[in-house]
Length: 138
Image (cartoon, rainbow, N blue to C red):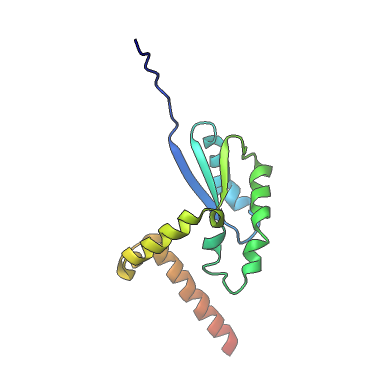
């Protein structure tokens, strides 16, 4: 007679931050506090998104590389427990870059432009460019 065991698995949560600077109070209120409470209930992974940070800091890669440890230190300082939460570096997982390449070949620009996050990023870039242009000519 076989005894069947049931393994209870926690639901998974994936979240993260770009490594473009130290985290601040806004991060704590906006997401870190919630991540601390979720680490006991879920199988949580936090991604330090260094490659994503390069998308608008490619001209200054040192800004990203020098902040990776700062972001991780901030996680630990607020109570993220590495025994309960996986903390991963995006560039250390080659499959993420591979999947991004496939995704970028499958998703059209018009579809991306309908994404609210992308829309917001485009608007921010336009505003930054307009602001920089205006201040240069004044």
